[in-house]
Length: 501
Image (tube, rainbow, N blue to C red; front, side):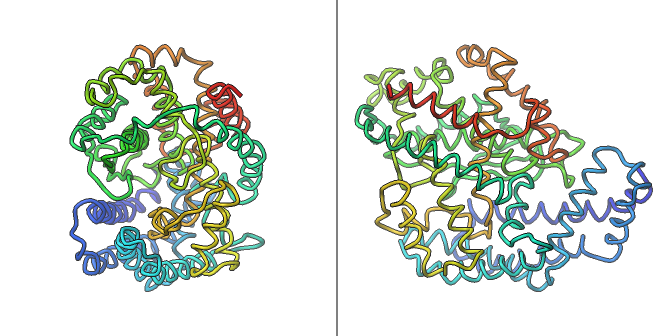
């Protein structure tokens, strides 16, 4: 470690501690805190956010960062330290141009807004959330504007915060291909939707039994309960304080068996990523996933590529049937697999099948582009949302709860996040193709042995944290950058076979 980097360490450790505290408050706010707490707790969040900013954006850190970016200093750093300096430079670019009072005010705003969103969703009243959303959008436009350089556009700035490999150019190309090849396939499948019966899914399923079985599923895929906990929230999510404290949530609905099960597998995929980051990296600036695109690839890989396969359920389906014999005793494994893979246009992203899922993301991506190109107002958003669903899915939300209010992300100011879900889903398909060449993946699943799969992902992706970006990891694992054809081919092959097209 160079002497310059050693001087930087106390600043990094302080910022890490403050960020950890903020994460803990966010977790508590969404899982356990009483509703009336938000307006008051937001002041604490504001102070912590202000101190976090000060811990990094100051003259001493600025001087140390500049020195560490010098070629001679770089030669004294190891790979981890170089990655930390690179990440610090990125964070500095995000924060330095933002006035501290605006950063604090925004942090307080989003702390309150997530609760306002949850109530507005419950009450089906977009007009109650709209004033908060407008303020959030105004801040995000302002913050992106501070950072725009050259010919970059504000929305590209926001996208880069989640995955530097996928800006509008790359996403437009990817989504255009999906629209050309997957939307026609979805329309063909929709004609045969009635050929698969999954009415069993909407019977009554005891909530406590769902909790028990979902906990079993988390452990089955590898969730370590000595280093992680499960709670409940309006919108399932994963957060971590470090790799020995990873927290996930789920949501249970009495009349939807699939929902909680696949949310649990999804969030467990995120958790495995965080739990398997190397101890030497955790609690540093590179002690998290490489990008949100790569992070979502892990959750979508477990949820869909593995979790919706026949091989995954062969060893454990009898346990599911034994949990709900009154509903599932007459449902064969083959019937169940067809049910969990049934595809049709739908309104709710988190309940969407694999085939239609990316269309949900395209709708959000196109709306976000419109927002940051000043082509739509907050008041217009419900109408634009509904028009997009009619255009791409052929269906229209009848309420704001199942439309514009269904996702929590915008209440946190997370504009630019949604494309990560689609990128991650496509990356999962690419990793699947690669892994099948390297191991007998289906055989492992059939015997209930997920350990080799977890170990491969740990050694190839997880343990490296954010030292490498999405394409660099894909190059290491698969020998090539991101390629959308793996995703398109995966969906075409799967659904052509499922529906005998």
